[in-house]
Length: 398
Image (cartoon, rainbow, N blue to C red; front, side, top):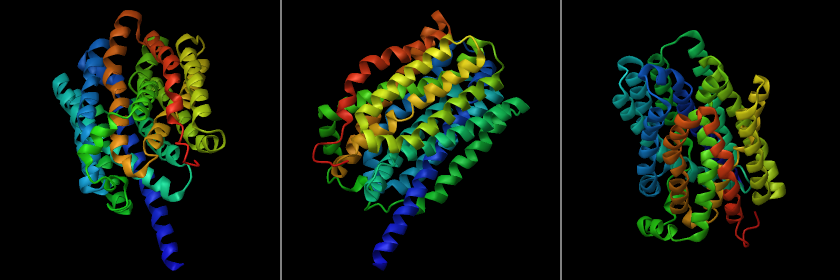
């Protein structure tokens, strides 16, 4: 009994460590996203050019994601998360320096590329470890890990809004954020599940397992669902603050506040969503959140009263809250195939972050940044057809 207690205590520590790692990842993302309007102004780029600049993050992530599962298999989540966080921090600092000191789009793009590499590997590793902890605990908790990510983004966006309001230079803010991004995961990593217990160690042939996963219809359908829902979340990350500033004629600090409102709502949705998922199942909850997200986008775009627009950001955030974490849980339903499947689903899903920035930027050049957001509501309709693939296998009581 004493051994079981120690094991339970270790799982609880691992649960808390995973939540911290998710939060640090979100903090890094929002630190950059909250200063995009000022970086855009410092670089003197159009919406289309900004979209192509943000593409550097997506390219880095897409290149990293297919390799991440194999890295976790080889080195374990602890080492991979620590290394990826350090690379992520370097990218944030370089992007801040490129935009805030030199006003150089190429240097900024190089920083964003490194940021994307670190984020891609970090994302897969923390989801694999989170799925392992979820399975050890025996109930749905993955959305709460993503709530930790969202909480990190709320903190990051709040700090970004405060820095923007106080006139703190972009480079000072982002270098300070980079230090935290590198240090916090390093302290949390020793409490993650050991390498032999995380999901990356169940595959005897990571390369072959990855190729087999790419041929699985269910895995690919889950990936397509995550792609659409990732675009729903990622569009807000990249464009909501800019769209509010440009489309509703508000100052940058208030645009950052609107972004923080969206993130706060998404965090709340992820905390509450675990109860709804256990009660109603993945399919019904995902369909409901998709419809909610579409309504939120419409309110943000067509609202003429600023409180209604901010309410739309709340509704959008709640609707965007569960798609990505549920997709990761669905991909990891079978622990023996989790690393490969999470890597595939993440790769397909991150295509949204690859295609999203330039596509939204192109639309923004023609219809305005605010109305370009309507693409999200349109794409949610066909993506609803892929939702049944996320249901647990029939032999899984969850």
